[in-house]
Image (cartoon, rainbow, N blue to C red):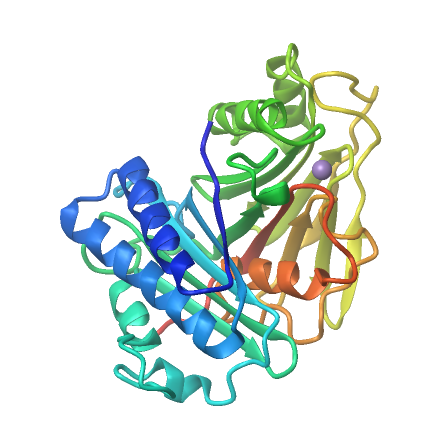
Length: 350
Ligand SMILES: [Mn+2]
């Protein structure tokens, strides 16, 4: 089962823990020595920056699917996420400049993170805090050859800092179809993780099927596990249509213009109790669309903030902002929390 490394960062002694987590994740993702060193440096910088700007926060290091499926470059990547509820960074552009430092820290700064990572995204809102996400893969250079029409990303926060999250997300590309799945294994801990991991493995076999059929394959495969709530969204990039089906308590919010629409799941537990029929929703997908799937670690009534997910935002940053904004000290989380986001491809960069 894939580990999710969660490190609360409240003093400088935890910076080393974040670096070790990045090195472990790099080994799991099969990065070479040079990229492992890069991942360790990025992790160190993000932890140092978090302490500098917010005094305390959380970091999550895991191994994820890259934001764009690339058949010529298979493999998973290390994702390093920093999130805090601090005052926010007033001068984001300045902070991203290589060598920029507001204090006399030894840190090389966020500019280094942006330079070393394949993808780097930062969202800072005054009074709400800062989110930074860096992904590093084994490949040299950046960008994907294909024109995917969409990107996906997610964040997975294990309950109480456990080694495993009972939630899992994954996505698979096949031809014009991109299939994103979010699974919440019943309860939390390693048995929940076993159920959601089985869902991910099965998704990789059946992703080209329509979502409702994919869910029935998953139902069969998850027999013998605790079961899971699962949502599957499939984008046909050529037709500009999104199909959705879900079983159990996973929330799906689709942005249409300036409103958020809920895509409904059927009651049930994949692998344990399947509804007689699974309805599929089919909706238009436009360059302004955004899909957010989240497990019940976030409150079901949570509504994305108006600045959620501009077209240029990295989907993993959007997911991390959701975790940051929905969580607070006043409402302690009592479960694993995962958010997966499907976003249109950003405008072409020259
Ligand atoms: Mn849950």
